[in-house]
Image (tube, rainbow, N blue to C red; front, side):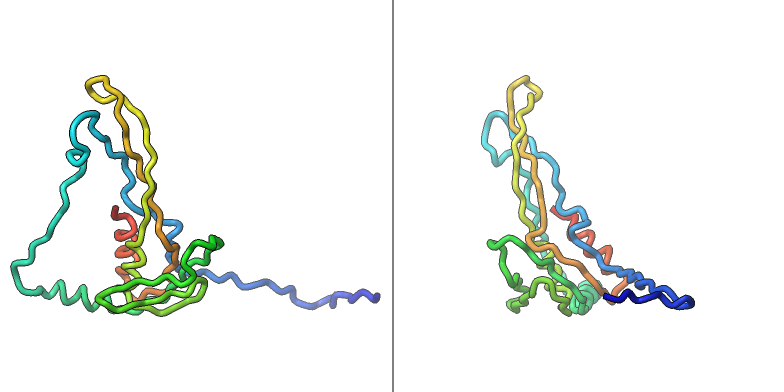
Length: 173
């Protein structure tokens, strides 16, 4: 088989480097994983933090209206593919009674309000550690491990504050 000779003055080809400003959720801290100490005696519910309930006693503010506009921004995202046959092939979220399906591995334009539901879909597993409480009794510490149900990347966000918004949601417990 004849071998092709390289032309003497031919320019070498260099593949272009593409820099994307995508925010990969797999690279972010998810949840507020911190151990919760369970009391060695008494009801377990006493070890839990109280729930926070926000009361509404005034009309909708301009800030709330701005937030609603912000949540209607259209983002370009890609939900990560999965090799686990038990994972949902087309994750579905619901916001305000409207369903949004995501196709894994494909770029999609969706409203921010659906991305928020996706970012809040987290699963937490717990491991237990034995420790000595203040009275010298053996007690258990519940150590949480939180991850997203569906890893995704935001490929385009029209808002300059969108990146910080998503990082804050991912960091919530």
